[in-house]
Length: 233
Image (cartoon, rainbow, N blue to C red; front, side, top):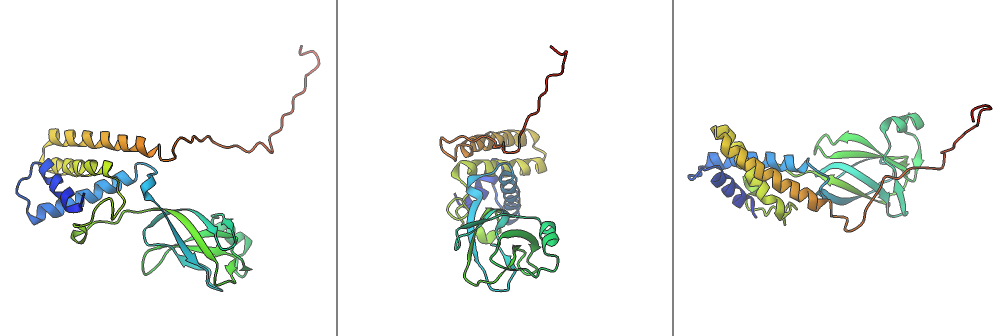
């Protein structure tokens, strides 16, 4: 489904037959709001991506892809090593003047790029190699749609699964109906949206196939001390 089709269905669900430019623009704003709401509801499989950066000698800070919302993991694929994510405070404690150089051992977040707004990370220590490839997995953000995106397919262009398309235009329609004072219609569309999102979350929970997971615990340091006191039996 394209964004244009989504906007059309939004306005029809809201009971608007004549679709003026202002109404279409309003529908697009609400569609954007619903998509961001849905994206925050779960750790969706369709929001995970992977990117790479290549180290440059004496360069400590690197910008990640502009659609990075939350980094998940980093690994030095050139040297077959994982790189833990540490806090900037831990890095400062270990190397206050940032003078250490060598092969990267850890990653820490430094903030946003002043030009692009992209998330930036620091490699610790400062790399001495200009050929190491650092691969990272991350949770992406969905961009704010404008009229330039109207021809975009929500799935093939932005990865939003078909099972959620109906929830998007129902949720956007509900917002328009609230604005119009149609509380009953808004409640109906919102309930339909919530039902579809819950179904999608069930499907999302099966994205790891038939595998099941449990919390791991470190038993290495667990010890017990038990002494029977005289006269206690």
